[in-house]
Length: 442
Ligand SMILES: [Zn+2]
Image (cartoon, rainbow, N blue to C red; front, side, top):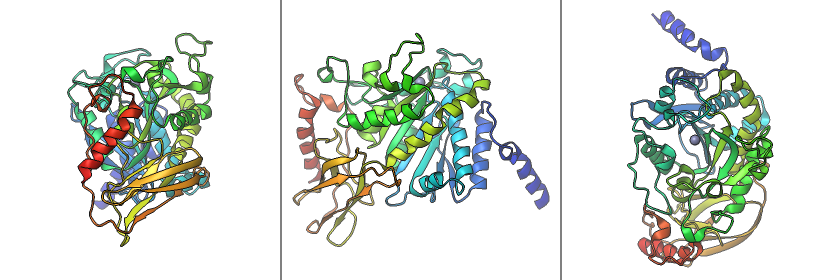
C-alpha cells in the first residue's frame, strides 16, 4: 500500500520534477506545481489559500523564505500578484517560473540564497482564476475574462482614497484586503498586460492635487520613481518606453509613468496598498499582447527574470526597526514616519513594535510618536541597504511610556474629502488628519 502511495506521489510529481514547461498552466496544473514545490522544499516553501473566487477556486499564495509559515522580526514581507485581470496571462506564468528559479537557485547562487535568508516572498500567480479559465480563446486585446465572474474589474474594486468608489467589494478583493491587513507587507508589484511600462501611484487624484502635467504624486514620489525604474532598467526592452499602439514612438520616458498621468482610475490596488496597507506597490504592464501564444513565454521569462529579482531586493531600501517601552516590551501602533513624508493614514508599528520605511539613501529625520509622552525625532544618514540585502536598523525607546496604544483604524472612506473645503491640498490635510488620529489614541 505504501509502495503504491509512493509511486502515485512520484507520478503526480513527474511533470514538476521534469521542470516547468513554457506552457499555460490552468488551475489544476498550477495547483499540482505549487503543491509539488511545497512538498519538495518543506523548510523553504509554504502553500496556502487566502480565499476563494466567485466560482470557489482557491486564491493560492506560495510563500518562500527561511521561515515560510510565519513572520520573523526584521524580515520584510514582499509580494507579487498576477492575473487580477484574467485575460492578462504573462504575469501568471512568469511567477510560476520565478518560483521554480528561486527554489532551484537556493544554496546554489549566493545572492538568491541571501535574498531568501533575509526576505519573506509571497507569490500569488492568479488573483482572478475564474477570469483566466473563462478566457477560452487567447486574444491580444480586451476580452470578458478581464473581469471576475460577477463581471467586476478587480482593479477598480478597492476603497479609493480620493472619491467614493460605490462598488460592491468582490470575494477576490476581500481576500486580498484581508491578506494585506494580516501581513506586514513592505513592497509589492501587481503584474498586468496590454502595455509595456512600470506605473506607480497615485492612479487617482483629488481635483486640486493635479499638477498642470496631470500628475498625481504621493509623498514618496522619489521612491516610487526609483522603484519603477529599478524594474524597467533591468528589463530587456521596457526602458525604451515604446508605445504598443505606435511602435517607434517613445510614450513612457525610461519605461515608467505615474498612474494618473497615464490615465486616471479609481479603486485600484496600488493606491490601496500605499494608503491602507503601508505597502509600496507598483503596477507592471509586461506585454503588449494580453494573452500571447505559449511559444512566446520563454522570451518573456528571459526579458523579465533580472527585473523580477532586482525588484524584490528593493524591499531592503531605507530604514527599519522596533519601538520599545522602558522594560524592553515592543509598542504596537506607534506612528513612525520620515519628516515631510507623513502618510494620509499614518504608518504604524505592527504587533512586534516593528516599522519599515522605504527611503532612498540620504539624510532623514525619523519621527516616532506614542500617546502621552513627547515624540522622538532621530536624524540619520541612511545607506543603501539593498547592497547587503538588509535595511538600516534604527530602534526607538520610550522609557516613560506605560499604556498600549489602541489600534488606529484608518477609515475606508475617501480620505482626501474629509474636509468640506475644496481649496485644500493633501499636504494641508495631513496635519489635521494626523491630529484626529492621535486624538483617537487617547
Ligand atoms: Zn490589467
